[in-house]
Length: 204
Image (tube, rainbow, N blue to C red; front, side, top):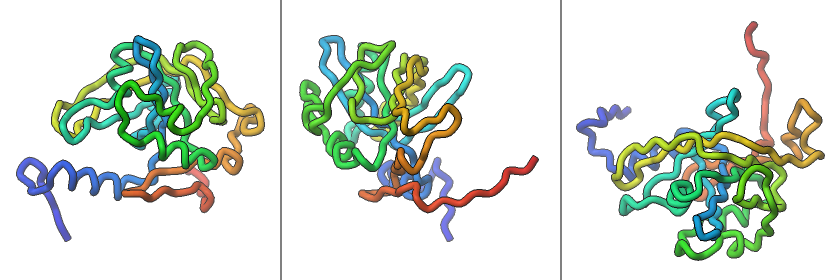
């Protein structure tokens, strides 16, 4: 049994990352498209992701600074063009999603690297992945930085201005989880499927 008081603990940032990513899971994956002011597109997955608000509809995801304390292209692009498209990571596109997690020079396009076709997303300039069954066009609501040290996060609050959803998934009330096949992030190279589910009635 171990207890750590973080203000004087021996845990490095890397150790804390492994502890958090290995215990707070499965985590949904935001597959985020952004664009810089010159029109170059970027696409990257983030598993520190969830819904922050319904009225207004706001998504929250948190890109971490790299091991040198430098921001990812996603953050740099959001500061130049404050909008994005957030796709839900799904099993059908997992190989492409994994491919876009690679660290590329800023001028290279992850859509092209992963062989993904782009298409227009209403309300924003940034394109969406044509094959993705669910996507949210968003305008930047706020950015909250947690420092400039390696692995520090920046909380991105993205307000939804448009929604794309495949008609086969949505009946106006429910999303068909068996058709969507969302995947969750675990630690290391591991992912989880949403196939082993159980239900419990909530108390009144």
